[in-house]
Image (cartoon, rainbow, N blue to C red; front, side, top):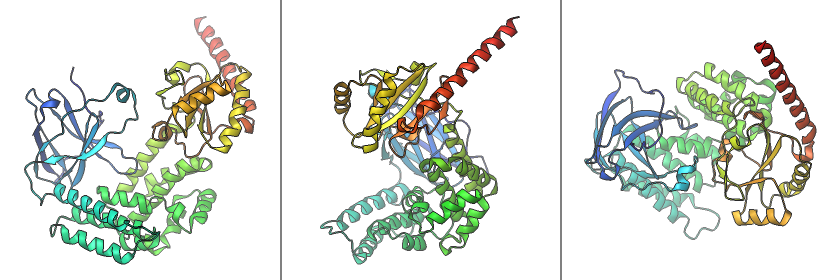
Length: 478
């Protein structure tokens, strides 16, 4: 059986047009013989929805080749077991590439659905230093070197003069000229350097770099947007006013009008992107406003003037809609305190009171004894599952043993995917999962907030539903 590397992507994002041109990628990597390689890009960089570009089968000698069309310069990606390769593609070019020797995932990595590969730049054999890939690698190397030097002997502030000198040295060391894509990549790499060293001068960097149409397919622009602009609601002095407007008016048009009054957001496409990203962030960080954010994003999907922004809004709706009450709870693949892998399927037919605990968190420490009291009541059909973080697995096991806690504990360091899948921004956090596996409450009451009455109401409703189904089934048989 062939090893399939990467993921299967449904549908093609790019369509043939007068503006598209063919790209060819070929190479030889013997350690991947027999594998199928999937090249993809991101439809956009907020949700990072993957879009297929093309596939190549590696023959018995290690040779592979693939052709596809692209409408513009973009960054392609290829997942190779423990690695993720990045390759910048320009229209009409043939790239002869080579991969690092194949390293297979360990058994633990194979079982971990949240494994993150190590990124690397794919080596291009048939182009020199004028190639876009070479220029970007050189730029990133210079950026890292100069930024490190700026912080040598750091005393709490970096001199703007030294920053501008470092930027000049970067520019002087790069080949002259370059495509519009590379110029944009360089501009926003430098914008991040200014933002970091100018003591996070949000307004200054905004006015200098983000006053035009977004570069949707440029990774550097998107990285800078995420770092400088992406948390606008949190950074802006208008945060409270905008949140109040969102709460009161629940309107895309009114939010857009409010932001359009500021000079930094004169460009419509940029302003819309800022609002969409802010709504996306707020959905994750403010549980009270989740439904409002989703409603306004649905307006953006149809009302945003820029077509790229409408697509982004649609992708966000598709992504965040999976964690709304009534949808299936994301599956969990974590080891419990006994070293056995836990999954929700193992608890099918029971309510799961899923909670997230952090060592050293005062509220968590206070409420875990209340969880213990609920557990000791042996409540019908209720399973308590605690996801534990903030220390080592050994510390978790020692606590369980010392306190004689009897319910399920799952160890999950902060980089585990479960926090992203369940959109956990703060701890403690509590959810209630229905016996049929769907989310009943994304934000359930804590043990201190009278969880039990809510649970008994849900339990009685479920028992009535089971009775109704049984009676209905009996009528059907008659």
